[in-house]
Amino acid sequence: MNLELFTKCRERVIHNCSQVIVGKDDAISLVLTCFICSGHVLLEDVPGTGKTMLLRAFAKTIGGDFKRIQFTPDLLPSDLTGIQFYNQKSGEFQFRPGPLFSNIVLADEINRATPRTQSSLLEAMEERQISVDGETTRLEEPFMVMATQNPLESYGTFPLPEAQIDRFFMRLKLGYMTREQELSVIARVSTVDIIDQLDCVISKEEIEELKRSYHEVKFSDDVAGYLMDIVQRTRTESRFTAGVSTRGAIALYKASQVTAALNGRDYVLPEDIRFVAPHVLAHRVASASTRSNDTEAYIRKILDEIPVPLERIK
Image 1 (cartoon, rainbow, N blue to C red):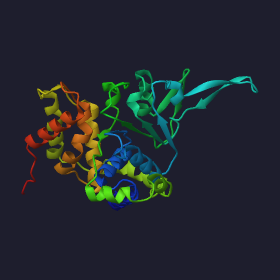
Image 2 (image 1 turned 135 degrees about the vertical axis):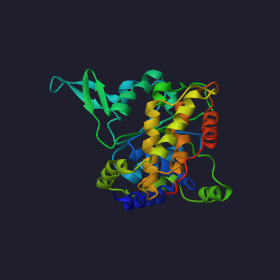
Image 3 (image 1 turned 120 degrees about the vertical axis):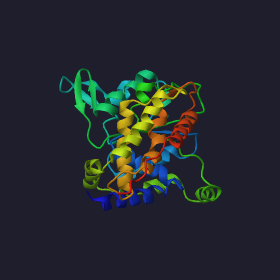
Image 4 (image 1 turned 90 degrees about the vertical axis):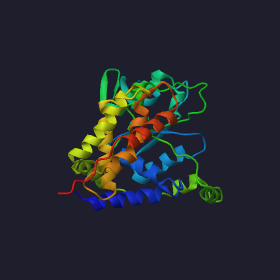
């Protein structure tokens, strides 16, 4: 396992994306973690914090085809998947691919589309394929959906169903910059111009190596037990009406492995689990409160309450 590749790729991606999004190295690293795990990202925050710019910068950083879809109430499933159209010259129906046939898909304001259109993403996100008129077509790898949504304006929006939210590997938030960081941003040139000048810093071969080798990161029995203690606690916690699914436990396991590798280790520490757990688990639990801030705070409280395994002295 080439740990140096993981650390160098992390440094390159953070350096490239931080030219656009200042002071959000952890968020950039988490997006990279999702990408290596073949997961999808839901970026939820107030308007104007740089959600779309971060995802566009990341797509430019890793290369590959990129498509942006602005979700609106009148958007149809066929606008995403593609259609069969009649070619008058050949006298036959031909398939015209939609924007989902891309490596990186930015679903902007995903909660503004109707549930029917939202659900058309499910097959693509989970099975890496799209079915149109009975014909199934595989999507090219890498494939990643990066969605944004605004948690403030509920009028005219359609909340994502639990089955759809569970397909997202992580839910991230950017938050506001510090005073000094914001002053540097408002005085610089246009962010769009900066993104246009970004280069691809990871080759296709390096991406394949990262996705293939992170599974070699080891979990000790104690650390794996600590991970399961967290997952099972969400299922017995009185604040939650539903706990983390097995898919969520697998996502936490993979994210912890990649986090360890990006930090130059071939073994997972409890700190790796604690770092990614709020982002991997918070959107997978159901509670009486629908606010995402509350569920994330509860997950962090659980992390503080569960004893961390200590290294045994032999």
